[in-house]
Structures are given as C-alpha cells and as structure tokens.
Length: 293
Picture 1 (cartoon, rainbow, N blue to C red):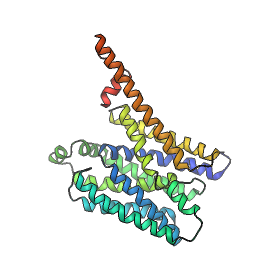
Picture 2: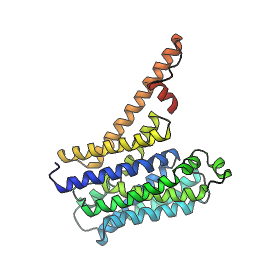
Picture 3: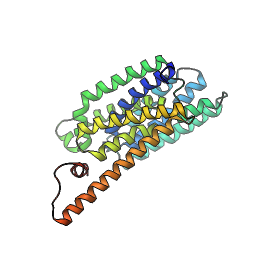
Picture 4: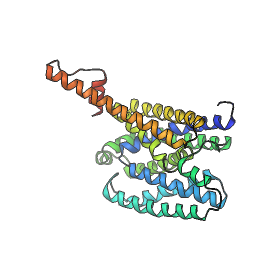
C-alpha cells in the first residue's frame, strides 16, 4: 500500500485534515454551531462542482466557496446568538440556495459520473503532492490563528454575555471562527467528500466531549480520534472498493456509540455504588463521565 505515491499523499493529507478538522470542530460543537458547519460542508459541493465544470483547480473551488459562504453567514448573523433560531433560519437560506447551485453545476457537467460522485463521497486516488502542500499551508494557518484566539474564543463560546462584559471582542471572534470553519471544511471535503465532511468535523469532537469535560484533554482526544478514523478509513478504502467517506464516517460513528456506552456503564456503576452505600468514586471512568455530564 505504501508503495503507491497516491496512497502516501492520501495518508499525509488525511493526517493534516484530521488534526485541523478536529480542532475547529471541537469549538464548533461547543458553540452549538453544527448547523453552520453542515451548511459549509454542503457549500463545498457547489464549489467543487463549479471547479469541475469550469476546469480550474478543485482546491480553489473548495476554499473559495466555503470561505465566501462563511463571510455571508457572518454578515447575516448581525449579533444573533450562536445556534439560535434566527441564525439557523439565515443559515438554512444560504444552504438551500447553494445546494441548488451545486446540483445545477452537476447537471451541466458532461463528463463521467465518477467526477461528481467523488465530490460527494470522497476519493483518495486523485490527491497530488501539490494538494498536500496546499492543505498543509492552509491547515497551519488555521491552527496558528486558532492558537492565538483560543482562550478568548473558549470564554466567548461558554458564556458570550459575560465575555462581552469583560471586553472580549465576541463579534470579531465569531466572524473569525466562521472563516476558520470554512477553511477547515474545505480541507476536509477534499478527503471525505462534500456530503460526509460533516461527520469528520462533528463525530470526533462530540465523542471527545462525551469522554471528558477538560478542554485541553478533550481537544487532544478529538485530534487523536480524527486521525485514527481517517487513517483506518484510508486502509479500508484501499482494500475494499467502497467510498472513503463511508469508512471514515462508520468508524467515527462506532467510536461515538462506544463512548456513550462507556458513559452509560459508568453511570450505572455509580448508581450501584450509591445504592449500596459505598459512595461515589473520585477517579476512574465514572468520575470522567460525571465530569463530562
């Protein structure tokens, strides 16, 4: 498997995407902006479809449409709370229009069906060294900006009203985060495809936040989980002729179910201890589950 240059590029790109998508996705889940993330993942489809139709770089289509859509979402928010009903309505308008544009571009495309199918469900056979370099540079920029604004962004995500009262630029952070989310989505879509990028952005972060409530540990765990499911998906996709996005999503969903099962078991143990008069445990999986709750 490692003797094929396109597989080496796929593993390199997968590692980059997993770390970047995990870091940004963790904040997205915390800020309850998963609908915005889903919209940007949908926007990746018309961007790539237009690039295929017009014959220019797919990366340009991904990044251009996702970042532009992120700026539109930021302009339409106008001070609305993250995850609120008004923001959801504005996000849905953008999603519906651009999704329709994507299907128009796909209908106008006169090539083989494999092109649009790869845009929707992902493919690792066409990843080039130039794309890996582009992903690495964009990912590094995202991580550097996220590291610079991470602490105030965490404060603004947990309690935006108090953060604003303390002088934190909540509005500016919100716009910056949406742009970062757009870039991270454009990166991940080139691995998993436009329809399944949402899974890589959400599932590892949601799984990590089930397992622990400590921000630093949860962020690290998100990156590790994303890296694991992405590389496992690449191995499975090499040996079985099914879409890469299916494997990545299935593995991530399986870990999500296992995390919830572990938390349920830990709570059952705590209830048993409480009923028997032993008292709650101060360490171990039960305490971890209690902290996450």
